[in-house]
Image (cartoon, rainbow, N blue to C red; front, side, top):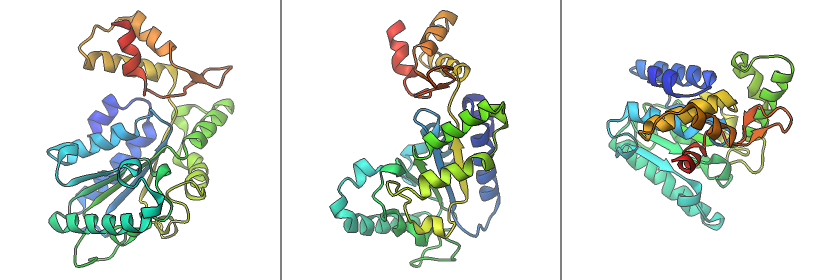
Length: 270
């Protein structure tokens, strides 16, 4: 996993550092005090889903297809605000039942920024340091929250630090944490709004994904060409990378869509 992150995850030194620290400490402990809870934040196309699926692939033989991996999307699983009480009950039952089957289960919550406020708090009893909950020992479980919330703030901090002559690779978690906290945990539109998960400090690792620069996008293009079995032509790599929008308008430093649209843009050239 560490090698794969270093080789294939483009431009995210903080992510590599945080994810490896969290996973290593958790898996090396035969008797963890609580489940591993990580929250991924950043703009679209910066690698949040990529890293979570990579992580699952290394931890479970069948990866995302494993019966011990459970993936929730608010749009698919919890679409109607008026049914929130029903969703709470079914989510609690699902997690409890699956942890009874296998204590080493993983639960991925996608698009937390679209989650109905209050819904996620139903899983609080499964995240803390108790020995058992509802008769189940659940401390070896892994919970990953994925969110675009905080992405704009991470981008703004990265840009401000660039203007202050601080290199992107030098950015620390401490530089970003206040901005993420404000955007995610104090935002009425966020699934974490007034959440006990935040108030009780149940998230072990907040993982920020930085905006990607032009040379990172080029790396994504090369990687995608190789994956599709296509010839890596420097001209094509340059053109695909150039065709993506960048911000701010003047300097065009960071990709507005990360590497999200790389695959679809490559199809124009072949």
